[in-house]
Amino acid sequence: KQWYQRRVAITAGDVQRFPDCVKLLDHLGLYLRDHAKVRILVISEMGEPLVDVNSWEVMEKLHKLAEPERFTHIRLQKSPALEFLLFEGLFQDREIMSYVIKNTNNSKFKAQGSNVVLTVKIKEDSYDYPTVDEWETYFKTINGKRNWSECHPGERADTVIIKNLPTKWYSLDSNNPKPCERFLRDAFALYGTIRKVDYEDCVEDGELGDDITALGNQFGIPLTFNAYIQYQNYAHFKAAMSGLKGKQLMRLFPGQKPTFSPFVVDYERNGFLTDKKHRLRKLERERLAEEAKRKHEAYMRQQNELMKKQLEKRQRKKRKMEEKKLEDAKRKAKGPKRKKKNKSDIGHSEMKQIENLEDECKQVAAKLLKGIMLKIAANERERLLKQREDVLKRYSEQKKLAEEAKRKHEAYMRQQNELMKKQLEKRQRKKRKMEEKKLEDAKRKAKGPKRKKKNKSDIGHSEMKQIENLEDECKQVAAKLLKGIMLKIAANERERLLKQREDVLKRYSEQKKRQEEEKKMVEEDKAKNVEAMRVREKELRERLMKKFKQFEEKKQKSTDCDSALIPLL
Image (cartoon, rainbow, N blue to C red):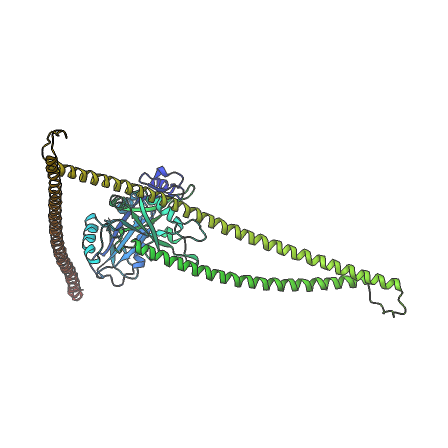
């Protein structure tokens, strides 16, 4: 009892009470926590088939057995036969899970409407989670089929799918909940730098916890969404996959109890965040947004027209009411009706007084009408100004987010361009130096060893001509040698490239052989698993048949004993 009271007294005011928490977003109160998953097997004690047993009644009984604790989520899995019932359950904490397993394992109860005694067996469940070998083999096989390459993002192991995330937990506006990409980036940047983020609305029955279903699905807004997070490096992707294994989302605010939401993690297989698909999706969203805007504008026009008509009707009614009031006031002011005097009997001064009174009544009526219209106009203006301020606030927030993203992108592109320029300049310098060295070496070889220069006074005219001819011949020989050297270099380069091509082809053939061997191994493993499952099914059937025969023999023995005792009695 003391332990249970301590567990109930936990509130979200202190995060230190949850030592296994991993912080995602502080200002939204989002944390990661270890998942507690359980597999529950319900079997009849005598091995009878569970034909008359209702699964909903069994689930209610399991909830009662788990008291004072409770399941956050429980569902029936598809059983191969009516010999047993298989359930999958989730808890908020591993401590609660161990407590429930201790208390409810091997417990027995009777099914309603039948005398079948059922036994419950609870065990901690292992998680179906993708491994490193799975995604590596998948992308190796798929790259050849779809002409994908590991150089392009989205066509390699770099995108994580997180399914069944609650929309309200990642939204800016609680009245119109839509997932905010900035919140997703900030939350999952815990594992590394993110390249792209996108989301997809979904609602899958049976995959949500009881705490999340309480949020409701008002006005057709989707309850959950699938987040697609693309990391820049393979190492960051791998860290995210290992970090999210066996976790669940927890929302924690001061003065409130924590709420939990399970989610499913997988790697993306269909190139959802490739540049082409992302661009097409963006264009489609823009088109849909424009259509929605047009419909909204048309709806607002209709509403404004209706409002104008209603205002006109109200104004007419008010005028009629005021005219009636004025007529009643005139009648009261005049007093009881008297006989009309002939114009000949009424004097000139009396006629003027009557006309003045009528003018005053008209002026009062006009002032009253003006005051009423001004009040209506002021109220309408205030309402429109408030609407305008709200729209401007939303627009300014969106504009700021867009500008921040644009600045970051421009800074990143500048850095990339500068790095590319520096690399190109280094390569060009190296090439120039290599060419200059080759030319200098060729010239030295063509010239031969250095000789001492003779003075012009010691050399004759004929000797000068011979020297000039020899220099020309040397230049021609040097040019021929240079051509030969360049041809040799080109031949060597060609041989090197051919060797590289052969090596690549050999590697490709080896990879293909490995893939075929892996496929064969996988098929053999599948066949072995199928055979093992069949053997298990046969063994189970034999056991059940033996138990059924034993039960029938006991029945027959009891009937034989009764038949023998009846004549004696």
